[in-house]
Length: 244
Ligand SMILES: NC(=O)c1ccc[n+]([C@@H]2O[C@H](COP(=O)([O-])OP(=O)(O)OC[C@H]3O[C@@H](n4cnc5c(N)ncnc54)[C@H](OP(=O)(O)O)[C@@H]3O)[C@@H](O)[C@H]2O)c1
Image (cartoon, rainbow, N blue to C red; front, side, top):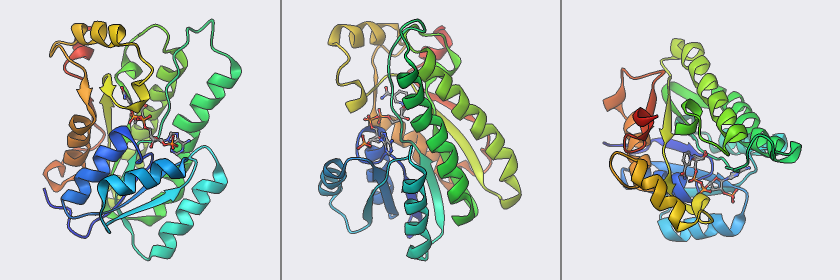
């Protein structure tokens, strides 16, 4: 797959799945802009990827002013976007009874409102035939305990993706969703090993995923090899969703 001179934006590209995705696109010739809140994490990502093709921007997806800064940055670059990966997200695990308003608002402000308005503001900056990939989660279609509010945000992401695939089809823009299962990223650093082992045991492939494996699916959907794929929901989860 060749992305030479393609301009790519990955929200939440300083760690985990976003970082692996940015790295893969750069290895395939693209110019990539990654965002994140923490400037140290962005600097670390820059050091890890170590390429002039990578640019970073401190931008909190939950703040409309930061989304405006991202839009301005892209407008001033003079380049339209070929691939937009809406990946930035957070997870919080609480039962429905334990979920506070603050937890609920944090999840929805970042995973849904931030994603929605980033998409809205960047639509005018997409080339005809662009590809958009939204990062959902396998929990959007299953019923894991402790994941009620997070799962609801990801079901909202799926709905936004379906609508965008319809609305943007006239401009030949493809919109797809990647739904990872449990993946070994900083997001899961606090998850105790025995829980990860138990989850892995329930996966048909008997392990959790690697960030690079999710990135591979994202890169494929962004590529011309996926030219007739739009509106799809691609599970990348070792088969765990079919067990539910
Ligand atoms: N890992 C999994 O098991 C898993 C499974 C299913 C779905 N997912 C989804 O995959 C996506 C990536 O997850 P990950 O595991 O790679 O997470 P991660 O390792 O925690 O990385 C998240 C990235 O998003 C950025 N981010 C978080 N909040 C942000 C905000 N408000 N504005 C801008 N950037 C923000 C983080 O940087 P800062 O913190 O510096 O902002 C970081 O770069 C998320 O949407 C997540 O829900 C993950």
